[in-house]
Image (cartoon, rainbow, N blue to C red; front, side, top):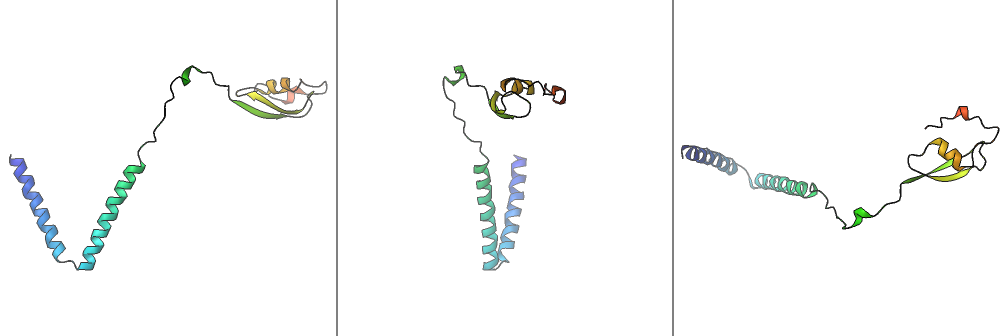
Length: 117
Protein backbone atom coordinates (compact mmCIF):
# COMPACT_ATOMS: atom_id res chain seq x y z
CA UNK A 1 0.00 0.00 0.00
CA UNK A 2 2.93 2.28 0.73
CA UNK A 3 4.24 1.87 -2.83
CA UNK A 4 0.84 2.83 -4.24
CA UNK A 5 0.68 6.06 -2.24
CA UNK A 6 4.27 6.93 -3.18
CA UNK A 7 3.53 6.38 -6.85
CA UNK A 8 0.33 8.40 -6.58
CA UNK A 9 2.14 11.34 -4.97
CA UNK A 10 4.86 11.28 -7.63
CA UNK A 11 2.26 11.25 -10.41
CA UNK A 12 0.42 14.12 -8.72
CA UNK A 13 3.65 16.19 -8.66
CA UNK A 14 4.26 15.45 -12.36
CA UNK A 15 0.71 16.46 -13.26
CA UNK A 16 1.01 19.64 -11.18
CA UNK A 17 4.28 20.59 -12.88
CA UNK A 18 2.73 19.95 -16.31
CA UNK A 19 -0.25 22.12 -15.39
CA UNK A 20 2.10 24.91 -14.29
CA UNK A 21 4.01 24.60 -17.58
CA UNK A 22 0.78 24.61 -19.58
CA UNK A 23 -0.41 27.81 -17.86
CA UNK A 24 2.74 29.63 -18.97
CA UNK A 25 2.23 28.69 -22.65
CA UNK A 26 0.43 30.90 -25.12
CA UNK A 27 -2.45 29.48 -27.13
CA UNK A 28 -0.21 29.15 -30.21
CA UNK A 29 2.47 27.29 -28.25
CA UNK A 30 -0.13 25.00 -26.72
CA UNK A 31 -1.56 24.29 -30.19
CA UNK A 32 1.91 23.37 -31.48
CA UNK A 33 2.54 21.05 -28.51
CA UNK A 34 -0.84 19.34 -28.99
CA UNK A 35 -0.24 18.99 -32.76
CA UNK A 36 3.17 17.41 -32.13
CA UNK A 37 1.71 15.02 -29.55
CA UNK A 38 -1.04 14.03 -31.99
CA UNK A 39 1.51 13.52 -34.80
CA UNK A 40 3.66 11.32 -32.56
CA UNK A 41 0.63 9.27 -31.50
CA UNK A 42 -0.57 8.84 -35.09
CA UNK A 43 2.96 7.91 -36.19
CA UNK A 44 3.10 5.23 -33.51
CA UNK A 45 -0.26 3.81 -34.53
CA UNK A 46 0.75 3.83 -38.20
CA UNK A 47 4.03 2.09 -37.36
CA UNK A 48 2.23 -0.63 -35.40
CA UNK A 49 -0.23 -1.25 -38.20
CA UNK A 50 2.50 -1.41 -40.86
CA UNK A 51 4.70 -3.77 -38.83
CA UNK A 52 2.11 -6.55 -38.64
CA UNK A 53 3.22 -9.62 -40.59
CA UNK A 54 1.37 -10.42 -43.78
CA UNK A 55 -1.16 -13.22 -43.63
CA UNK A 56 -0.12 -16.47 -45.27
CA UNK A 57 -2.79 -18.54 -46.93
CA UNK A 58 -2.46 -22.28 -46.42
CA UNK A 59 -3.91 -24.37 -49.23
CA UNK A 60 -5.15 -27.76 -48.12
CA UNK A 61 -3.93 -30.77 -50.10
CA UNK A 62 -1.17 -28.95 -51.96
CA UNK A 63 1.57 -30.79 -50.10
CA UNK A 64 0.95 -34.10 -51.85
CA UNK A 65 1.25 -32.71 -55.37
CA UNK A 66 4.60 -32.89 -57.11
CA UNK A 67 5.86 -29.68 -58.53
CA UNK A 68 7.95 -29.45 -61.63
CA UNK A 69 11.63 -29.08 -60.84
CA UNK A 70 12.88 -25.53 -61.32
CA UNK A 71 14.65 -25.12 -64.62
CA UNK A 72 17.12 -22.75 -66.23
CA UNK A 73 17.64 -21.80 -69.86
CA UNK A 74 21.21 -21.83 -71.15
CA UNK A 75 22.79 -20.88 -74.45
CA UNK A 76 25.22 -23.52 -75.68
CA UNK A 77 27.55 -22.27 -78.40
CA UNK A 78 30.87 -23.23 -79.90
CA UNK A 79 32.10 -26.65 -80.96
CA UNK A 80 28.96 -28.68 -80.23
CA UNK A 81 26.77 -30.65 -82.64
CA UNK A 82 23.66 -28.41 -82.25
CA UNK A 83 24.32 -24.97 -80.70
CA UNK A 84 21.29 -23.16 -79.30
CA UNK A 85 19.10 -22.55 -76.28
CA UNK A 86 18.39 -25.47 -73.96
CA UNK A 87 16.23 -25.83 -70.87
CA UNK A 88 17.97 -27.79 -68.12
CA UNK A 89 16.95 -28.62 -64.58
CA UNK A 90 18.33 -26.32 -61.94
CA UNK A 91 21.64 -27.62 -60.65
CA UNK A 92 22.71 -29.08 -64.02
CA UNK A 93 26.37 -28.94 -64.94
CA UNK A 94 28.20 -27.73 -68.04
CA UNK A 95 28.63 -31.34 -69.14
CA UNK A 96 24.81 -31.72 -69.11
CA UNK A 97 24.46 -28.69 -71.39
CA UNK A 98 27.07 -30.05 -73.82
CA UNK A 99 25.26 -33.40 -73.91
CA UNK A 100 21.89 -31.69 -74.57
CA UNK A 101 23.50 -29.88 -77.52
CA UNK A 102 24.40 -33.19 -79.12
CA UNK A 103 27.85 -33.53 -77.61
CA UNK A 104 31.17 -31.99 -78.61
CA UNK A 105 32.41 -31.91 -82.19
CA UNK A 106 35.73 -33.60 -83.05
CA UNK A 107 37.53 -30.23 -82.92
CA UNK A 108 36.20 -29.30 -79.48
CA UNK A 109 38.79 -28.76 -76.75
CA UNK A 110 36.91 -29.85 -73.62
CA UNK A 111 40.03 -29.20 -71.56
CA UNK A 112 39.18 -25.48 -71.77
CA UNK A 113 35.85 -26.04 -69.99
CA UNK A 114 35.10 -26.79 -66.38
CA UNK A 115 32.56 -29.56 -67.04
CA UNK A 116 31.86 -30.04 -63.33
CA UNK A 117 30.59 -26.52 -62.94
